Length: 174
Image: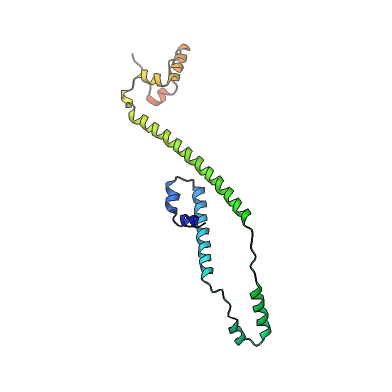
């Protein structure tokens, strides 16, 4: 547990929430967890600083009924705190942790693949020719469905392109 405490103490929460590209729900859940964790640590440190000994001699001087003080002291001396078996809670926490780790690995691989696709697209854009240097043959070679559509329209004797005149104006050659 000491390793986990030292790792948890050195988490850079701002970097964790901003640089990993997490969803807003995940960032909100992390910040809520951080607040609960900080509050629990603060309460724990406050409780550790409190005095835990009882000065029965002081109460014997102040109170007249010594039998009550003797009875309370006897009960205090015989008190044994109840120990709880927290293994079930630890197992459920570990199960949630393992699922979160699996989801994080899946998200990391998904992000890496998307990043590789984006880098390939960027490289393609950087190495492509400018639009003003493209020819009709280049466009038809890269998008053969355009050639098929044009051929189908010509076969039906449709020479006009829908929406062309409204976009570019009606031009007739004499």
